Image (cartoon, rainbow, N blue to C red; front, top):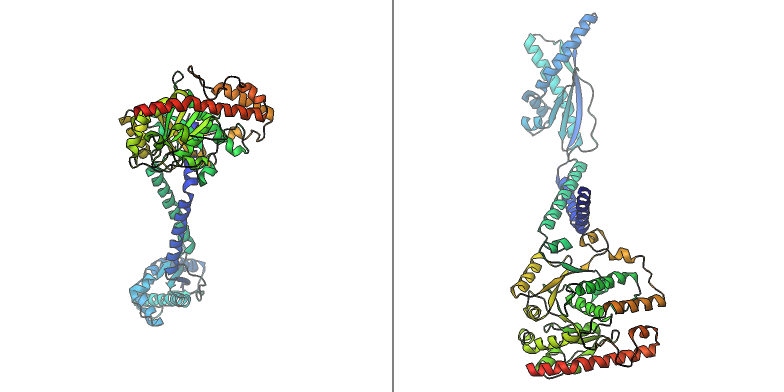
Length: 546
């Protein structure tokens, strides 16, 4: 368990770095540029070093030499204090004719005496290489003169037994010692990295966008489906699930399989009384609920189950455009009595079991129209024999979806991964709870199936379908089609459904083996049965309730 938690944390950290790597890079680049600019504006300081040696005068035996060497080393330490004194600085100022004060010159000088040595090293810093060299040499000379003055005044003699002798001229420095550009740039990179990581941590902490199934489940609701990202839907709204059982590329397998999984989940929500009127909505616009409703309707109708998709978004209708069907009269015309369902409902040719009811003319009072008795009667009559999918406006901007959820079997709330905020979903759920609407579940849409961030959404369909061939044999198609029709065919409840052939027509199993002409004839008969079954009863009910 601990290893799993560690692995999950590492994946989360890696996904954060992958998501915000531009932020980290930008912080590092900006910090490095600022460090480079700082170093460019700093004055260049050069350093030169000159040395002096403390020596004793006189010759003699070895004992005398050893005593003189010990004296020289002792004097070297005491002369260090003289080297950083004001008199020496004043001597140097006069010798070099420098306008700087003695205190300013002392700030440029450092004196060092190596351990157990009679050598005195003077390091001078200046803005130019020549000045640094001259300052170091002059300082050793001034030290020698001041030391001689101190020794002679103390002994009241003209000569001193101990003297400071220069070891040579200081070398001309070729490169500045300050600023240390490499060190400043390294500090800039580390500071930028720290700032970038801090920004990522703060953003991830304050980020309320939904990025995982677990985040939705924390609100106490279930996720009934995860729909992977589909590039064609990113560019524009379109129908991806054509209703067929085979597809031209493995990229589509994950998307279509996720819709079929959603279809199965809906059928098992209540085995005895599965939902037949489903509202598909979202919290805010742009979460893909219209495309999802359209593709879900196609998936349901692909099994032969009679399905109708109603565009109840009377403010921004898009369903007819999705299917490439002509716009015009639709739901509002049926509810107002200016047209019948048979006149305005359109069949989707690739999937004969699917009817599409457009929005019709946009009314001035969408909420009142959707909450009318005529709308309730329409849904009740359609749900007797059809699976009804309703594309509704988002929950937060308007009340249309909430009104329809009240009379429907339940609502599916669409959430776009990485876009919808947790507080938006929470407010949407509160709206449904306040009206006592039935929440069927949440659909996590546009889930990434590649990259480090894919694993946190709990979607693995792509890996399963990576081994599926793109061109199954015709025999496999026929067998799969027959099996799917048997599994997903709904109970007729005493009525002949549109998916069932009219008397005298071939059965679904026989249709699989029939010629294309026979299949076309069967489809036409099904459509006629569809009209006969639904239109008259729906129109009579609406007229009565109106």
